Amino acid sequence: MITTTTTPMEGAILKLPIGLRTVNRVTNRSSTSLRWRSRPLHVSASAASTSTPLVDDPKLGPGSLGHITRPDFPILHQEINGSKLVYLDNAATSQKPTAVIKALQNYYEAYNSNVHRGIHYLSAKATDEYESARQKVANFINAGATEIIFTRNATEAINLVAYSWGLSNLKPGDEIIITIAEHHSAIVPWQIVAQKTGAVLKFVNLTEDEVPDVGQLRDILSRRTKLLVMHHVSNMLASVLPMDEVISWAHDVGAKVLVDACQSVPHMVVDVKNLDTDFLVGSSHKMCGPTGVGFLYGKSEILSGMPPFLGGGEMIADVYLDHSTYAEPPSRFEAGTPAIGEAIGLGAAIDYLSEIGMQRIHDYEMELGNYLYDRLSSVSDVRIYGPAPSRTVKRAALCSFNVKDVHPTDIATFLDQQHGVAIRSGHHCAQPLHRHLGISSSARASLHFYNTKDDVDRFIEALKDTIDFFTSFK
Image (cartoon, rainbow, N blue to C red; front, side, top):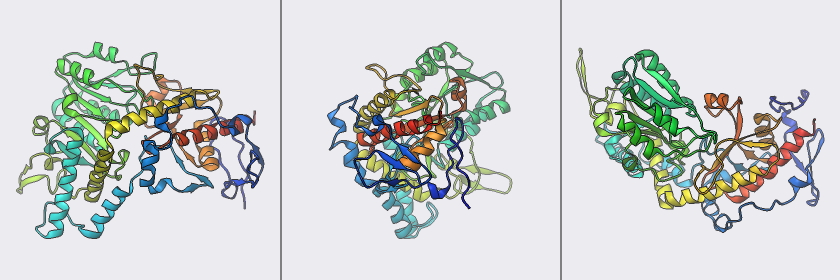
């Protein structure tokens, strides 16, 4: 039995019977009509016509970095619901090149074994590759290998700092400064720590340009400030913060700094020595590596004074019945069997990114991100969040937006089912930020270096078609 199709309304998720989700494209290519099996849909002239690019940059044309690297990503070469896939959800997770997939496969096929504990060939090989991956992460951000701790993800890396450093060092009245634009993983652990220690959370608001207010941050820093937790690049606003200045200000009052670099490490050169940050976290799956592994960077002198986060095998020196002694970092913070294959895959991803060059990736994404912003800005009734790009304001290559009177989840659903365009909808793990902006959710299109100008153009035309569809019910 086929259930009744619900009428799309504001705030409602577009629900269609499975049998009605396939788009039948008419054979006459000159026609602009797409047909649901339940009802015809006519694309507006604006959506059907080819738009004039607002940014005409030869670096985005054939031969661009996106065109060069796309063949390395098998997942991009498929159809979704009858349309060529356009993947624009890179701020949530990146796709994986063949080199990473093969590295994982090779580990499991050729030398799968536990690390650090065996003397046989397979264990020695696995250990060498695992530790080589650690060195690759260290080199990638200009750190020492012993300053890199593998974790399940960036969330666990932040929790490691919260429970090991935070519970040991924070006292009643101490202040932790966080911006209202942080990811939940950079807010919730510190709420828990504050409840346990009596520390106080203080929040930095946005400027009129919808950027975290670093001027306010500087004003509220004091000798009571013990920790500053801050993103490098916002996953919703696309703002890029001057972390070198901010970290210097925090150190001037004796505070430590934890940088959430999940949206910066995959897209630009990040140098922890130049930043002089105390802690920095990153996530493999956002930088073309496997899921299930991330990393924490910590200054060696700080890590050496931190107690273990988890107890068990690998993190010990000696175990007695009445007490245990602990290994030096990084082993102290890597209890149990780690994500060996995933770490090796991350190492392969870093090799791949490094071969392209992070500055080259950043420069290309800035061009493509500005093109996305300009094209999206030209669509009627679209509100983009975050700062407008300019000669002095750099945006990351993503746009969070809303369309007047159309729910973002309806937009994402229609784009997927009717056009094969993958974007994100929801609160992007940033509910306080959304509340501050007076909204409950938003849509987000986010780019990586394997995206192309054609991806942006197809997204924009699909979005226009989506808006036409929902406004036709008014």
